[in-house]
Image 1 (tube, helix red, strand yellow):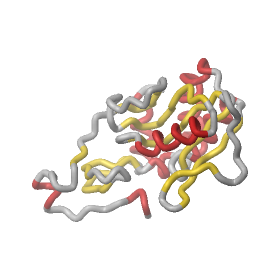
Image 2 (cartoon, rainbow, N blue to C red):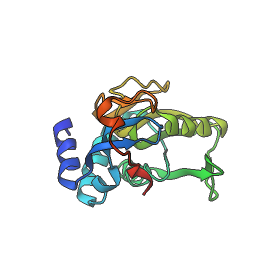
Image 3 (cartoon, one colour):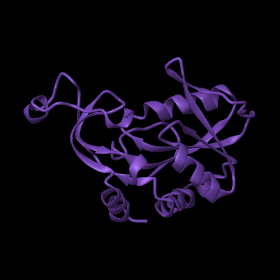
Image 4 (cartoon, rainbow, N blue to C red):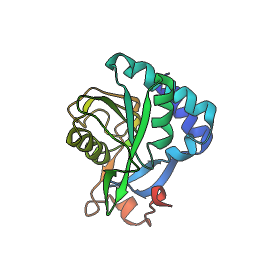
Length: 188
């Protein structure tokens, strides 16, 4: 799957937004990838999941773990495409945790799958959970890498779309963003 094909899925679904946005990382941006909109069409999810799965298949994982909420749909599809187990981590008291009776056994080879990464905070939290439970993170897959590959989490990483999207600290906004109300679309 080419980057242009991925962008086309985002455009046709209305998932590529323009404006003034506050990202989960706290940074501000003119663009927002609302993956939930792109991942509401199961034929598109199947295409995206297949493309990620084929890149990650050689890593030999037996489990896919995704941070909730964003990574759930694509993580489950990647696991389905690979024919492996799927689990997720979710927020509890403001931090990601492994719940619902999910277990990771020592030495278990695990892939982390996320929808969008800017600074990699949620993926790093997920990697830390895998390590704390004795698992071995063998790779990371994502639909969109907003850092254009600059985030290094210490394991092989693959994205379908890698872009360097401008992002700004809240106290260093360019004039056009400073004069425009910010929205946080990922939380609504």
